[in-house]
Length: 339
Image 1 (cartoon, one colour):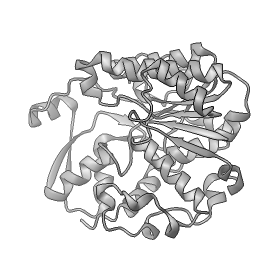
Image 2 (image 1 turned 90 degrees about the vertical axis):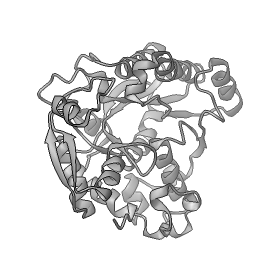
Image 3 (image 1 turned 30 degrees about the vertical axis):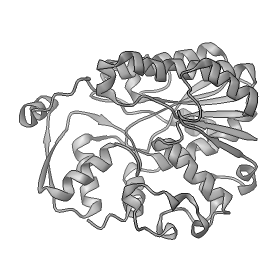
Image 4 (image 1 turned 45 degrees about the horizontal axis):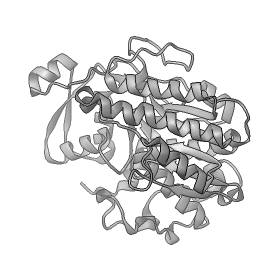
């Protein structure tokens, strides 16, 4: 079974690589080769000290053999330009993947406002080309989307059937990608997630840790609410979804996955700092106050409330998200920051 992962050098792609490496080494972190090229926050950390559940079957919710039969094809833009339809078609003709996990995305929300063509090329055109190729080869596509397809005016977590109404270019481009996948009639799933963080790249958790390590007080917006999601949590959920999706013959459906619980940005920041043991206080501000105090005006408007309801995913795949505080604790422990 050949599994193509696009965007493999991003936050989620790297977590899938880490899981694949962990499985290939029989669940033994001591044999891991993944940390030969660690992210900066893992420098000097012994691989065996990095958090992984001890038992791979319970970690992935099934037999280790189910996943060891997978051959993973990890690519990023250098190996496969997913915005080039001919390149995508040629790759499928040569490699014949049985399933695709599309992690490739233009995720710079503010830059999307000034570079909409680039955002739509990656977030709409790439999934469209992958979906068409998957449909023509009878392959399964699992495409990653976002909570930003919603307006943020809800007062309870959004379900998969709630009407999307994005308020920025990034959300519009991701919604266009979802629609392209649905229109292709390929098999698989669209998985929306929210507030993703990992040891790699740019994300809220790393930004807060960096700021709190050198300051005694930071200001954070308190009028944006959502569900934090560890990239490890999402990657594990994807690995557990794949066998069911590959066996399914139905057209792609939409699912939500995030860690359990809703929190404001300010309270999330305070918990990050508390768990890291840093002597820094969080001053909660409204978005307007934050702009006035810091002088920072974000180009893109953010949803005020973008929590996701995961009941459909739980029912379909027997997946149960952990509280976001629990996933954050695993993450902080694995970083070995020592700040």
